[in-house]
Image 1: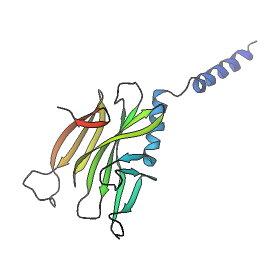
Image 2 (image 1 turned 120 degrees about the vertical axis):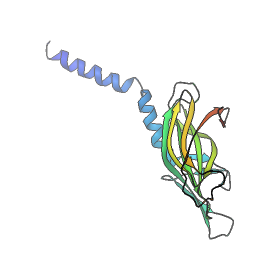
Image 3 (image 1 turned 135 degrees about the horizontal axis):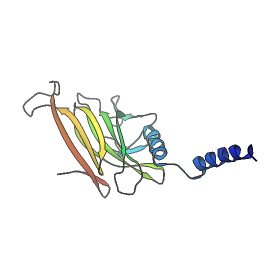
Length: 177
């Protein structure tokens, strides 16, 4: 009887870990793992959507053009609940290089729809900026970035720190007041 009890406890423990479904942290990990291969709405793509493969999307900047538009998943990512359903959603940055002098940074919201990553909205953050941090707090996406003063040329290094907050309104990201 004594030998059966430890084995029974071990089996119950293992079953509890696997049979009760993914925990919130496991859902957060799986949605985060899906981000490099998701399809993001972004206005610089010719169709308005960029299907990333291993974190990158590329297409001709114009039909027949040798210039390429490249959209890549930025390093900044955050997990948290954006729509109040209790599931771990995500916020990411996308960096678009349309082949000219600009490098455009976007913020994208990704909803966890029953364990599947569903990017639903993106918003332009700036040209040649530096995103310092990204977080989801109380249903809002908080972005801290470095930009330039209004009178500075785009060639100047961004040094002005700005914090912006966004929230989902339907399927759109809107700046919070």
